Amino acid sequence: MTETDLTFPRGFRAAALAAGIKPSGRTDLSCVASDAECAWAFAGTRSTTAAACVTRNREVYARGGPVRALVVNAGNANAATGAQGARDNAAIADALGSVLNVDAGAVLTASTGIIGHLLPMDRVLGGVEHLPDGLSREAAPFAAAIMTTDTRPKTAEATLSTGARIVGTAKGSGMIHPDMATMFAFAFSDAGVDQAALRAAFPGIVARTFNAVTVDGDTSTNDMAMVLANGRAGEVDLAEFLAALEGVMRDLARQIAADGEGATKLLTVRVTGARSEAEALAAARTCCVSPLLKSAVHGNDPNWGRVIMAVGRSGAAVNVEGMRVTVQGTPVFAGKPLPYDAARVSDSMNAPEVVFEVDLGAGDAAGEAWGCDLSAEYVSINADYTT
Image (cartoon, rainbow, N blue to C red):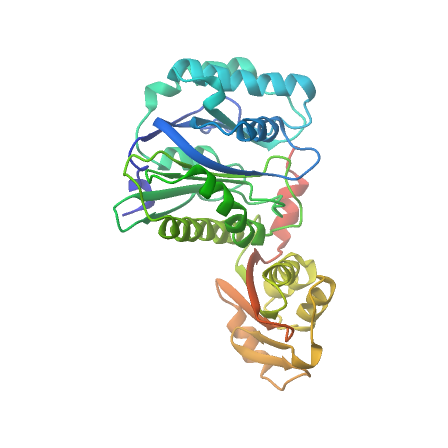
């Protein structure tokens, strides 16, 4: 199956159109609707300048009720827009609820794009009115409509032993250093799962997937991740479902890292020998966000001292004498520098993915994080973002 053939699980339909929010004229308004109430879990950015969509979704989440739909606009973050932005966000939920004939309190919202601009509500509301006309089970139009600086759509799927499915979509390329989840990550499933159990497990899944991604060290005002399950395929084994969900989220996280603005390669850092999973993840993510290490990766430079530096400032406990570092499978440090063929290792770094493995020598826990190299193109993209 190709990406364009991907369909949503049973009971879910989506639509996308160009409402005129993006200057490019590309699709920028979309929705996903379920024909049944969904159990759901949500994580939103911890940024203290969170956008209206995050604030409202968090309020809906606290009420604990089921949801039926999600509406997303791209090209405008509706962040730092004050009380008017909050009213506009609520109006979008109300409008989609009206045309789908569902309660507005069962509609979630998401906005992404430039910060500090009010939404063109006449275009947005006009677009919402026509979204139901295009509802189908095709996933590709929705995956494309939520993009901003992404170079490609991001999708992943899994099928459980019962035949129930999980389909995930995500967007994100810059302003990526999630402090809860990711830019946007949405997973939809026809599995029947208990909402309380799903919500209990979701923070851990987020920590091991989206919170392990970094492109540039900047946390967005609009980051969110969610999973909706409508039960159309019947009850499933919870452990199997959660493992499959984590696999889908991990796949999406790696796709986001690989599509970082200006990126030419994926950076993977695997940490073992940590005192705790949290410390392993902290060490791995600190390596992935280091501009010095990211630059070395871009230049195929096996400068493993930058790994030592990053781990040392991560807050993770390290037994330096027992510490081990490998670059693309070549040992370069084992409590002291090791001899290695720098030219050969440099050649091995000229690859789509560069992997550093670090044993902290302090415990038995492990963690993995993903990032990308730092290129001149990243600076160019962000120097001209609004001008």
